[in-house]
Amino acid sequence: MSVKTTTMPKKFHDAVLKWKDAYLPDYEFLLENWEKHFPREPRFELCAYRELGMCTEIECGDMQGKPKYTQAGAMQEEQAHHLHGAIRAQASTEFGSIQQHRLTLARAQDEEEQFWILRMMAEELRHGYQMLHLLVEDDWSSVSKESASDMIEDILSMNTGSHLLGAFNIDFDSFVDNVVFCALIDRVGKYQLAMQKISAYQPMAESMPQMLREEAFHLASGVVPMRRWMMQAAKGEGLISVDMLQRALNKWLPRGLEMFGDERGGGTNVRYGLKPMKNAEAQQQYYQEVEKLVRDLNVRYLRARVPSFGPSEADAALERILAGEAVEGIRREDLLHMPSPEFYRRRGVPAFRMVGFAGETFADVGAYLRHLEQHLPDAYRAGRDYLEYVDTLRQVARGELEAKQAAARMPTLRRVGGSCPCSKSVRWVVDEPRPAGDNPAVIETPAPPVPATV
Amino acid sequence: MAETATGVRVRPADEMDISAIVGIDEKIGGHYRPEVWERRVGYYLRRDPEASVVAEADGRVVGFMLGEVRSGEFGIEETTGWVEHLGVDPGFRGKAVGRQMLDAMLEHFRSRGARSVQTLVDEEMGEILSFFSALGFEPSTLRPFVRTL
Image 1 (cartoon, each protein chain N blue to C red):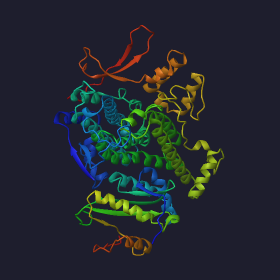
Image 2: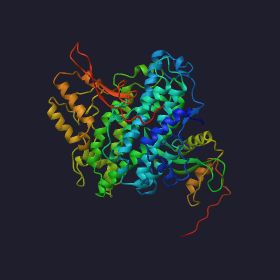
Image 3: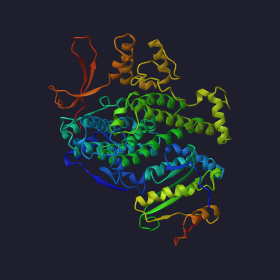
Image 4: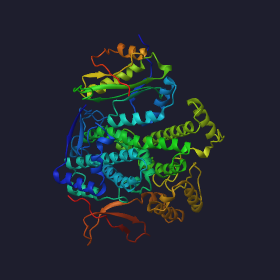
């Protein structure tokens, strides 16, 4: 295994450092305490890693067996366009997750868990840097009129609410979100990175191994605290209940499923050799993996609650409890459960179908919202993301919007001119459907003070 | 010659293997120690996630081997692979599951530039001693010392 490290040209590198000062202010604190929490481990370094000696032939799709591309300009235009979008989206998610994590990092109850998340945030910064480096190192003029400076400014100007994928536009409400996000949303990241490891674009493929190594710890930063919390909840010692974890699971799982893209899509990426699996296949594997996690957490709970249970007794008891029986006073509702994959979806095939937690369907919006009230965290329902969903759902129910249009109503990024001092920045723009013949209206939320300019 | 378990697949360990590792440890030692393995697996995933492996048979984890590449340990300056924890489901003993996991680990150690691999085994653990001896490990000049506090 041979790895090459590089840094971006100074102006771009400095832009990321400036972004870091704005959104990761605890970075220096992490480095000061590195030895205490990660003794003798290599110190964090902000750079791009490229794995050498990887496969040089396209591994799937129409051009399988042909040499991988080392330059975007050599790719078919549509192929390069898909790739360019994927790199931007990946960069957006990396920076976006830091903006989310920082909101509630200070609320951690355990110093070790807090430092795990802080380290993970620094590594996400590096992952974002890795993606920016791909945009800077190559010539993307075949698919984008933006200069490297503009592309980087676009990405570094995004804030929670303007990121390309829905999961990164949702505010965290407590440290439970930091942890559950790692267990569920970083898991999607693992799938995406693993798929992109075979990318027909060699620089992308070479960027993935180090990111995947770091991602393994990010997932552990979610799963290990969840296991501990389930154990503490079972013993009545913890401050985080199973219900809180269940609601966080319900909040994040639907967004995680949607991150794979529409269930009917993904074939183009496979044909172009950019990913080995279509969206539905990857999404299904992800769902099954989370199912296994939930089962493991329930067994952890049962064995903490009934210490006399051995492994086989705990497994048998879990089956009986899930079937509706109470065992040792433990009932079905005391445990964690998987929401239906169609629950609370607003993208993909089940978008706005009003599917309940157990897969039941609702015909009445009011009844569905009452159902969501029972399954989603209170603090989340008081936020912008939920309000927007409810608003859109009502329009769909009134027949003012088709589900397909509603699903497409995610924020899109535009360069918006104007007299505002930050008019060069990207704005969050949502196209509101209007009657035919009318001009599309835009709702703009002002961009944040530009944290980084290049 | 040990029978090789057919259909055994060795892959890097991940956070989803914690429960299975806890289960194997419990079968071997009779103690349920989830906290220990949550911490350990977290540690190895953070340090070098490709160095630690599990063996799967029919989709079930039947063995694990945790370790990493370090230098500077006990004055050994050269880059060295360390095998630090291992366990094989008793039902899969004698089927070369450990050998397959070790082969995968050694391959990774080599790719990280290690030229030797070390481990520490209690002399009273005859089965583990035999395992490492059979795989070419020899007693080292390094001797452990201990003092009760």
